[in-house]
Length: 217
Image 1: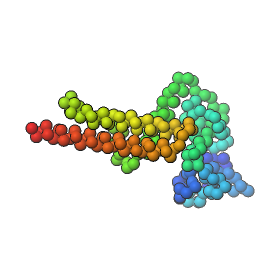
Image 2 (image 1 turned 30 degrees about the vertical axis):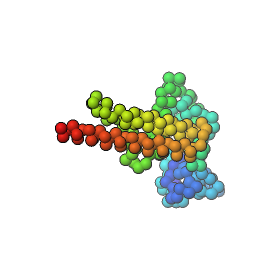
Image 3 (image 1 turned 45 degrees about the vertical axis):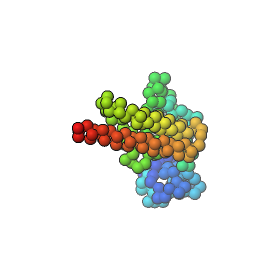
């Protein structure tokens, strides 16, 4: 632990996911440095093997915890959000002396954060990986005749896509502390995801059949 110092907040690769966030705080106890996972600082001391994977995020000498800080109001380097206790809590740390962004910068920051949160929620929820890329792509380019023949299926895809995006928005809002049952929201989003997968697979299959038939004639 020679590269670490008291007050460091680190990310690391835990050997087990039980009672672990993969985040830890380094403290000095009787002249020795001890790192404990943020899930439970009384019962989650990191092993030497876990410490070899540690990456320092910031140090508490430079940042202070600010419960009501708004991530949108600070530059990325000036604020850290630690999602602890399996994501139940979001602890916010702001660089000491940091100033808030201008209104125009806040608008741009908000848009960037919303996009990042949506992509993170999508990556966490969608499984298997093949379906992540599948549902993130736009509808295939079709001729007027193909569009007419597949109108119902296209509408199904569009409706399913809207429903899934709304479900992801709801998950992200809960993750950001706006209230709601995260488990229930995640289950619903997962169901909406597979409805979108079904719709897109149906569209691809029907479109391929149409084009094969057109080539045959």
